[in-house]
Amino acid sequence: MTDRLAAGDAAPDFTLQDQDGTEHTLGSLRGRKVIVYFYPAASTPGCTTEACDFRDNMSSLQGAGYEVLGVSKDELPALEKFQHEQALTFPLLSDPDLAVHKAYGAWGEKNNYGKVVTGTIRSTIVVDEDGTVQLPLYNVKATGHVASLRKKLGLV
Image 1 (spheres, rainbow, N blue to C red):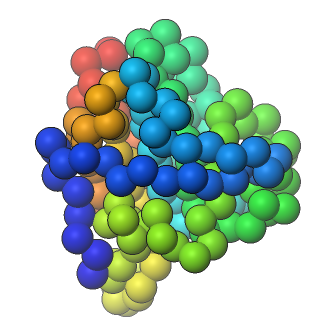
Image 2: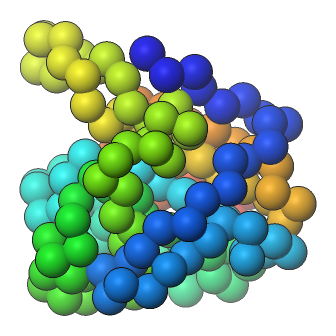
């Protein structure tokens, strides 16, 4: 099991490519609040529900000063297809070697329908303007997650 981040930890910097091959670096977003969310696989039912929930709440999140970055182990073609099919309006980042997943504690053992498996732990990490973890959330549910997150961030 990878160590999980706690509030007050420095958010590990990273550089990953999005669905279009554009590089995104967390450090380049200093001065902004960032929501980094990890999901198991593009175009699966739960991940589609969660991504569309972020998409549908994007104006509210951006209005409160938040950037959203989705991270999965998917390769760029799968992310491009997912982004296009769901009209997602935020970057989907590819982490095929799982380095960022592991740095954020979003890879490890989890219970999947009663069976212990190793994989992506559905997680959301909110990073403040200084690059510090503000709110780490692990084992989140896809359905209703963004509403719960907005409430925790005082955006409701």
